[in-house]
Image (cartoon, rainbow, N blue to C red; front, top):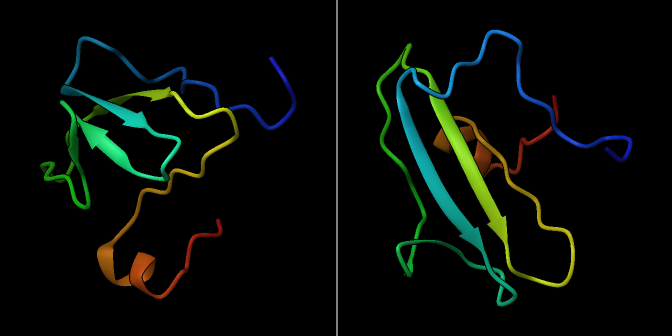
Length: 77
């Protein structure tokens, strides 16, 4: 696996919580079942397993965080 590649937490369990499958497209959209996604609803404390399918021919960024922080481009750390 290349340096900087994400890895699963040893505490993660694919059977716990929900699995959300998203496509990262070449037109810079994130879609779910063919529809653009701008927000996802999850329950606090719930384990969420993301499956990302990057169908673009280049690297995509994918950030998770509070809407207010993401709106201010606070994506580090």
